[in-house]
Length: 282
Length: 291
Image 1: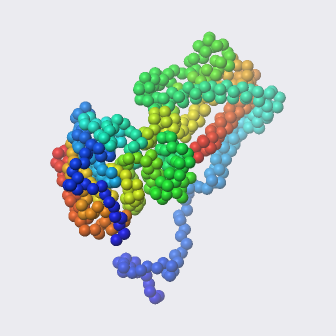
Image 2: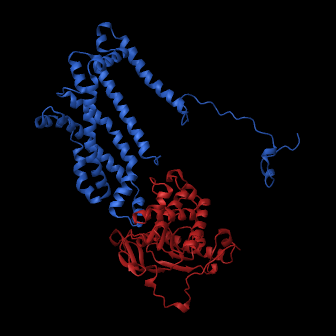
């Protein structure tokens, strides 16, 4: 069994004294409404994300998972409530929260290396240091052989890896991923999922992954938050206990792990419940 | 006759090894007619076809010129007569000076128009409230025909180069603004947002993200409007000009020198194609990353 042993932040009942508002991300009673209050995308959601943990946010289409992520990024603001980053209220986007989008956002006019350096460049990291760190990140995403290529000559998966390397360049406290592999084909998506786990193993960041892919969520994440649609509320907050605190660098090892099938079936069941509720309500 | 390969379920589960089996016969694709849909031709074929197209125009001209009655020949000169007139213009009439004056006017007007249109387009494309303030008025200006400003320009500046350059400027600037604004606005919102999540400030986003992202399209818009600028050049030089291609053509018209008029038209056409080529080469050099 070639899985990686990880010492995750200890969150046993013995340590309940942890102040959630001091965690990397603390979503504090957030409500987000649109159309002057006619549509509630997020309804009074409270949750916190820990260090060295991948949290997947899943739920049916239109459940507000992307809205929640964009508010953490600071690209949108809550209607009510607030979001804290290490105890401080988020008032807008900043380099402490890197984001990878579903669409290809690697800057087409910059080479792979220039892209990887970009966040450091605009944040005033000296040239020699940023080159060295950018190359390190490119090695991590297996793109060091393509450093002088422009994004337009790279495949979709490679472009997303450029975007990930660029986001790592700003050395974010939190890495936000908004369906980052949604536009990729199945095989590349699978490679990218394994890469995400590998990155987490190496960088120990707080990663929040928005996805609609149940298998992806189970494989990549340490914890899954399931959101309902209209209004967007937390239906379940699952610690993936069956993983026993491990991360698996190979997906097939997880799939054969005891407890995987049950977890998958449970999540499919929840998704079906939500879909039927939406069908019934409309 | 041994070991005939059977297709279908009989093959399932059996290892098929093509390298051992008989090789298939060469495949001949069906022959395509002249108007084949969505075909791919070599560069050489495409070049030959383009040349054929151009030659057929000159051929039609030549045939037309030779089929008019002799008495009217002066009004429809053949290709060689026009070329002779063109040669004579350059050799004896210092036509290069007129061509230079026309180019000077047109490029000066174009540079001024660009330096007005580009900041307006970037400003309005980046900031919604700026667009809301300026764009409705600027769009309306597009409907004022530039030629209608001729009397006004003549009253204000007389038949000077200033009035000519201003006419050219008015002819292109509002269309440049509209085209370039569309280019800036078509920059993907996610590019801007990803820059923001990296900690980019407003200035960085505008000049380091929006401008390079829109760059190739902006240059294409600029290129497309050079044709319009050439249109207004002739109008500008037809009204009381001493120099320039248009002035030479106007003078030739007074003496019914049709060959000189057509030589002028030909010159403008060639200059237009040259300008277009320069823009294309510049595009390739400036934006090697764009496909």
